[in-house]
Length: 255
Figure 1: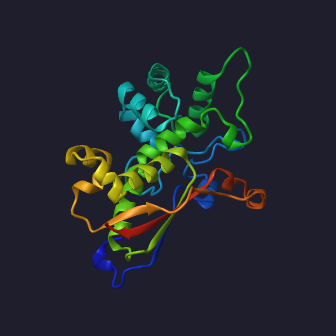
Figure 2 (figure 1 turned 120 degrees about the vertical axis):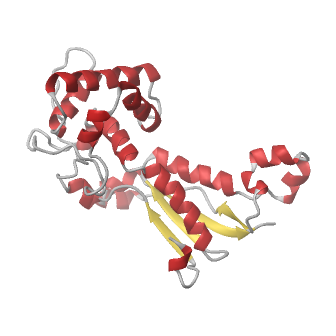
Figure 3 (figure 1 turned 90 degrees about the vertical axis):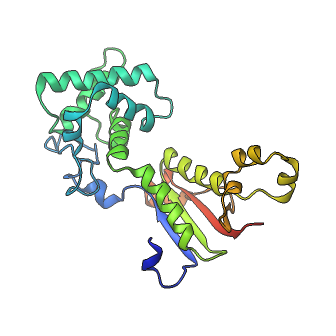
């Protein structure tokens, strides 16, 4: 989205955030936890581009307990307890020291599944990947390794630089943390109306609440409506659409 590569300002830009079904179904990436009993050789990679950076298995060999726990707290479940994240990180490091690198997704997922088990129920991999207890742990590693939240934030900023005035940007998210990035971007780029400016007389406080007021940008960003959800019929045809939210943002001139 570099401005030097665009000869004419677009009227619309679309972000379809996250991984696509083709990537999920590619066993070499390790994005899917579906039916690991049948596919125990699934590699623990988790990279969008397998030719750059470290795979999840390689990163874990270098990571400390503190680093793993930080990733789990930042990118794991929204209700992730800090002590629980530390415990899980310790389990991962201890198992790796005892048994070697996690080359197999099946072995890692079983370790996490057993660690999260409650009671005396015997562990077994679930057929549906979405139901696997290791899903959110691996999702946290994937988000971190691919810098997904940072790339989304940077991409939105670049998109609005090249977007035509009154142009619109549609962003489809599938995870709460992705939605939080979009909502934070809107807050950062929202232009306060004249009534708000008159009400908040102190410039410093206005900039704290509306950061755009402290910049010299000639445009702001407006959220046109509440996020749209997939209709029942669409979810019936594509079950992965059930967690999707569509944000419609508009580039507007500063008042």
